[in-house]
Length: 373
Image (cartoon, rainbow, N blue to C red):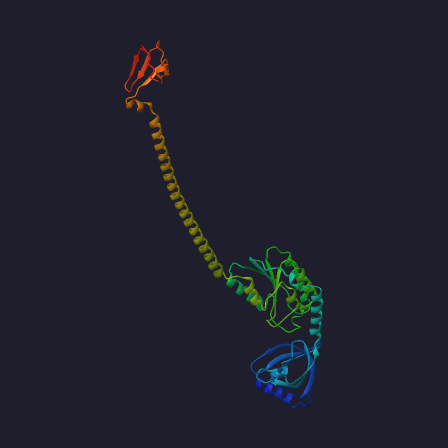
């Protein structure tokens, strides 16, 4: 029986057991690929089937150049126990592609079915509201997703309201909780948009977002709904049905909010534009008024000049017709019985004559009428 061991002694002992077991060298294992990740020197992924999972590492990147999430592959290699970290992983030396895994095939079948029914059609997408005051987020209450969304949204617009609807994001019943959240928020008037979000993961981790019930609840949602599931390279069924897909939850927060400083600058710019427009309008009106005033003065002066000229002509005409003007020149006006006598033959001997001069009237009695004509 071994005595007390240090951590290093224990890990070295375990590694020696694996290294000494010849049956574990260059063995073949078949399974589906999940959780691909890359570093500078190696590629890490998991190999799964219905009953279990193993962690794998491959130091030959070219072996995985044609491998995708969900592919069913046969790997050749040996288990390796990492002493410093105390972790067991399978060191992959060769990869053979056997075909697409069951989960991936289910994903493709569901995607094709819903696409034929028109759930992905662009004409069914609702436009993003122009004014967004409240965002509902359907995600885990314990994950980093809700914190990232709140931090980014509040930084950009402190007045924005974030409403969390907590759900399971993977595992049994996760899709049912997501469906219930979408239906509840679809009728909730206090929010403007809905975001269905979670962090990245394998195809199995994201399987709740690939179910038909989640797709149909998303399609039937009355509010604008955005998907923000996984990383930029992850695609799920809800991404195709949602009104808009954000590559990440953080990107969703960016897309749904506006920088307050940007809004302020736009307001100032708009105000200055209106101010300039108003000033120009006032200047133009004053200029027009000034021109109209000058035109009015010119027309008025011209009108009175014309009228003065006409009055002068009328005065001259009146002067010519003025009987006193004739009297001033030595003529006299002769009347008899109230009538003007313009001819000698018209004088009646029995009536007096009234001879009117400029300064008075003289009464005369006619004695004899001599007609020279």
